[in-house]
Amino acid sequence: MKKQHHHHIRNCSLFAMLFALALGTLHAQHDPFRVEIPDIPGYKTLRCDLHMHTVFSDGQVWPAVRASEASREGLAAIAMTDHQERRRNVYDEKVSRNYSFEIASKAAPKNLVVIPGTEVTYGMPPGHFNAIFIKDADAMSTTDWRKALEEAKKQGAFITWNHPRWENQQAHITRWLPEHEEIFQNGWMQGIEVANGSLYSPHAFQWALDKKLTMIGASDVHAPIQNGYDFQKGEHRTTTIVFAKEATAASIREALDNRRTAVYFREFIYGEEQWLRPLVEACLSVKVAHNVGSNTQTPRFVVTIKNNSGLTFKLLKVVPGEKPAFYRDYLVKPHSSRGIGVGFPDETGSDEVVFQVSNFLTSPETPLTFTVKLPKTPKDKRVKSKAKAK
Image (cartoon, rainbow, N blue to C red; front, side, top):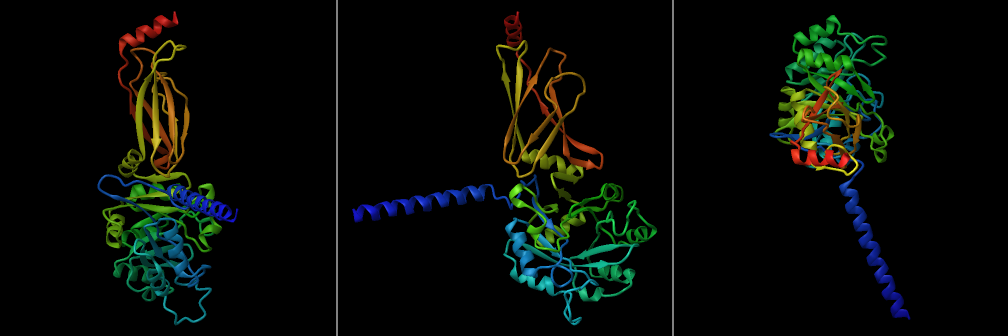
């Protein structure tokens, strides 16, 4: 009996170990902390958070924690952008403003790029600006915003206007002021935050398009990241999607300079069509099949859309006419498939199924369209179907 008992324990332990391993495999495949986004032709698709804070300004965590959080979420890069002025947790002014970058870069794993930066924070005008890819944050310590931005440009920084819609500074309307035009004309602004944390700015989106500014999305996180996002429910931090040639600091900078970005905010993706279209095509695969049912008068197509990414797709029917007939709204969740039945009434029916991807916007009011071509329906099948209906 004793041997049998030991044998039973060994079997149970083996089963528990295998079960735990299986759970671990499933967890790795559908990790709630990570959002899988495929590469597009010619570029790697990198999620980056280029605006965050630590205990070296008014944040609540050590810089190494920022690196750990980002690595857990599968981010490719982060920028350390502690405030120049709001150093609430720093009691010795001799502490360098470069220190958070130095700590985070030493703690980061090899596959996480840490970019040096700082946030120069002034009242409105002009507001708050991030300078990343800098050489020395201490050199920008001045109460004169013009001198600070001029120094950032001298260091070769990539400079972004942060959260233009922030209610604390523009309470009633988001405005592009003369000071912003001065900054823009002086080459002191290359990017603009279209989304910051839980705040989206359609004005900033349109300015990015009109003035050829790089679109940025960032968390601007101060507390531990899990205080603001419930990853188990599918939430994620606001980030910039960078289409870079390689997952390196130099390639990320080159992509930012050439405006190859999109903004990932909640379930929305904001960006130019030239980047959103290949991204959608990389995420979605489509199959079309005939489906002639005995209770239908005409042949039907089944369009199966498979989502190979961690993104959500909201599809809205575009109606050029009344044909082909199919339901109006479809939600294609991450790593799932959706079958759509499409009627093909007669020879005058359209040979395309056109959707708006309503959560992928190429301007504040313009969703991306997604088109599926339908094959020609064999006439013999159409005749047989009509005959059955009689």
